Image 1 (cartoon, one colour):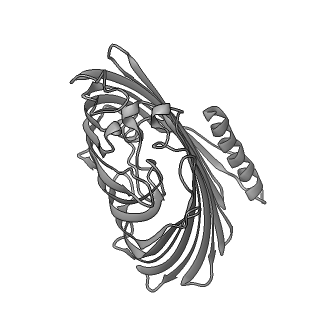
Image 2 (cartoon, helix red, strand yellow):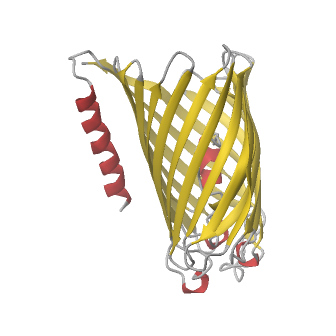
Length: 406
């Protein structure tokens, strides 16, 4: 299943790549790879849930392997980025628990002319613990795209998530632009009789229209409408409509402050139950590597968290990565969320995670990384979970393993 999805993503991206360039301009290709060998100890345990009869003991040894590959192709009017990462994690207990993960993504951006730009993206993941996967690979998640915040980590079963999106932006004049976007997402869980009616397969279809007006060199305003449709295997479907007014200010060439808020309305499709509330978000972002800063908070209503059906969710986080001296780097990533069920969804959950990593460059391609991670889920008892990890990894990183042009 996952092999077919990844192959489809790659084939679609390559087909678009061939079709967008009408002129025979030279394209530049870059292939890079990263391999992480990780080992450490974990206190992973369950307060309840499927594994309560055989919880792991403190200071259980684990080891993991995470190879990944990235392809970038840049032309005069388009950019293609494709990546794939595999993860194998073994926890040494009497059961010798193995967890395999697959994460892939493809993004294609093109400019048809100076006024029109479009973006196509698709991603796929199959993992039981997305947060730990990111921490051990040194990846910092950002809140820019919608994602499910809850993972049934305590069950030690992998869920599958796939997302596809398309957007078109047109420049109306020197100060104004208009964009249209659509997206489609699926989340599928393993069929566990005990969890039917709690973990429900679901589909998400969303569309949005955004008008942006730049009032100065650093300031801009946005007016956005978003409509979202959800269908669930075990719950009623729903529609959510939200209008937000946003403000953005460039504090520096690499740092941006964004604030948005507005009303929202959610309605069940079968029974007609509904409620009105609001959406709000604030984010401070600096994306230029190696100095990366991410500080954000959001309140989203009428969305799926991954547990039950419709929920209102608060999500906050802070992360940064920066060099300390010539060969040392420091990375910190902290996040938390609180999801409360609405319109007949009796399930709510809270989660928090924090990680810190110190990296020391051994040469141009090898680095030694030492870190710690804490992760916890509360709320629905069967998914209660706590994990404290200490780990060390040897990372092989070559972003320019192979370069060529044609």
